[in-house]
Length: 467
Image 1 (cartoon, rainbow, N blue to C red):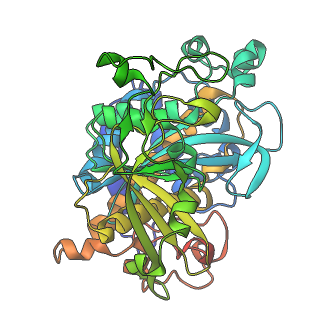
Image 2 (tube, helix red, strand yellow):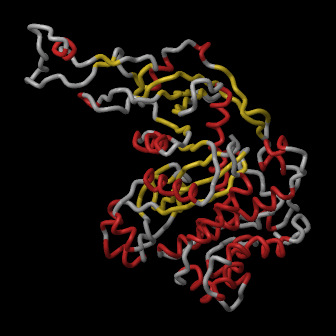
Image 3 (spheres, rainbow, N blue to C red):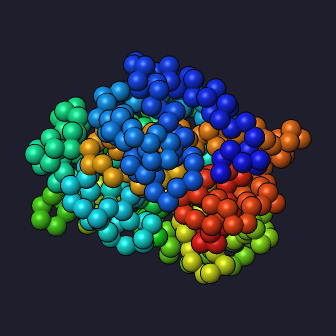
């Protein structure tokens, strides 16, 4: 239990921690029920939906707690801004990363806001679920969740009656369907404006494959390192462009040739690359094995975690379109990185790091993305992120914000309990630093899903997430 000897004084500490968040709530009742809800998320319990939590923390007040989270129209923006400020104090800085990802909430029914059959990473297949775009601020693999936004498909936004029943804000409906990468850009702008400091934006191939997302990050001045599919087309960095055939001779008064026409009578108008683009996978298949180097990025539970990496400077084929779906090279160079795992699987990444960046730095930066996966699982298994049973837009976002605040409190407790032996102590993972602090055998914290998250140390991750 949170109030056990492993976490003395947690209740008073929670009260102090929540004070700046409560200042963002306009009504006394809201300021009273917010700590109750967060406490319910932190305490043990198999289910952390409203009714079972109320039975544990506010017997007889189920309706009041339900009203606070699902109906009361308190604005999330002030609390979200305070969450960003607190997260920045914990883990922000030039060496921090901002991780963009999705997390799915599995649902059985059809009426919860945004629910539909779509890919669910938790299950590894398509399933009936809600999809949230997630933002995680992390430094030295210590994550704090600072954003969860529901993704609405085109079909959902177009269904006015479903949106009305779920209470989707009119501003969201008027703006229309927004893809996940556009939601992510809006969220990056929000957290940056609220004071989040980070040196690099990380995301998987769902985001990295979108040229407009990469271009927009660069335009806004963000360094980025993004996954890409193996089919991503690139050119060697040394590629050059020649004028369209006949254009130079015409400009120079050359006789006779004029501007040749393509088949069908169309005039050639695009520059000609000096070499054809190639898929990321094919580019690395052509490299000798010596181009790959074994790099260790951190210590795992069973020893050092390592893989083989290779990197090549390229220009991405995301410039103006050519015929047959091809594209000219973009203006900027980037690193194309291949990660060859011990299983034989290959992963591909693009990064906007400068040309002089060492391969070790690229690899270490890319592998920081794992922290959000750990965080998502802990928020679901320990804090009930996926336990909300309401159907409304406002209820879902109220619940997810309370979960984020609860997780930030746990990180606040963890980091405050760390011995102050210098910055080097922060380079280990939460799991490695706290593995020796055993949860009492037979306790609710050790034996059941929905156990109390220990502010001194969450339980060790399942093996499936330890890589």
